[in-house]
Image (tube, rainbow, N blue to C red; front, side, top):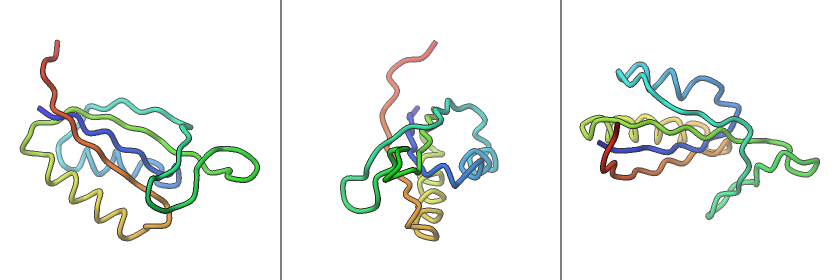
Length: 97
């Protein structure tokens, strides 16, 4: 199993969750109103007067077979609206209860 952490602009709304659901992935944990700044380019999302936009963080644990399809879907969203900002990171899940 793999954990996928996705950080994305709040403007995506429920699009990311809807994409996961369309791929058969139901479970996730979401954090609203998180701040950050990408390491390459893009504007900071800090929720202040200078940089008012905020991000959302979402983590989902998926079967290994879903990872590539999810990343492909996320990449397509990011390329279509690159100015919003979207990043995903994948980790191995060693154990669950």
